[in-house]
Amino acid sequence: MLVAALACGKFGPGDLSRTIALEVVAPDSLEEYDSVTPRARLLDGHGDSVAATIVWSLPDSADTVALKLIDATTGRITVNHTGLTGRLLARAGTFVGNPVSIRTLAAADTLFATSPSTVDTVALSADSVSDSLQVEVADTIKSASGGDSLTVPLAGRPVVYAITLPAAPGPVTLVTNDSTHLLATTDTVATGVAGTAFVKVRLLGPSAPDSVVVQAIARRAVGDTVPGSPVTFVVRFRP
Image (cartoon, rainbow, N blue to C red; front, side, top):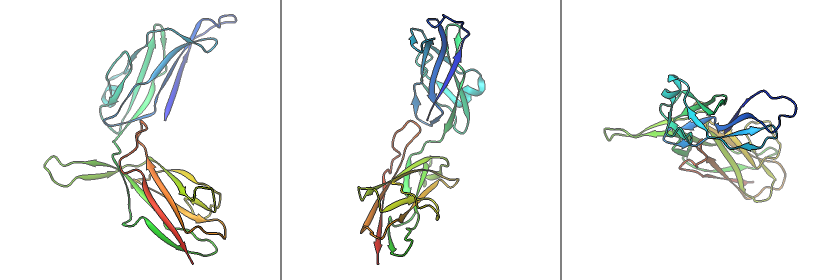
């Protein structure tokens, strides 16, 4: 997700051609091993860009612990230490942007189904609902001694579920609780403290498809797909 910070100057009537603000756009989070380049521009009273040289910095020592500024000209940053929040500051002459807070996160490098089988068979009834189609987002840490890798579950990571078959909406929906009956062919679910997210498939009408295919995809903070995506589930309805 991107956040924008706007620092404004004072101007009076008729001063719309003067420079009045510095707009900064940067992500609100960044994962380990990734880097990102924010954007900034000076604006006049009409909202148009004004040519300017932007200089980037990390305001204090706490920010440099969390983030590493690779290039003060472009503002490109990477993670120094995870689990912290660092602030990035843009300056153009006398205009100083509001610092943008950026959370540093462990790298999500794997997505996998938590159950041995990704196929679920559901008996038709008045309210047919599948088992949980559950996945886990994790950071895999390799052992320096050559032993088994450590899998660390990651909370608060978005997982996008989508019904890919049948192609037309209905007569099935994605739900995350036992009371919802609204039609939803896609849903974004954040992982919990155990690093897991889930949806279920609910049959809405009397005409049941032979099977429903659901895919789960997780993305890193910079938008890259997490390895293991998509995880494909199949839900079959049987009398």
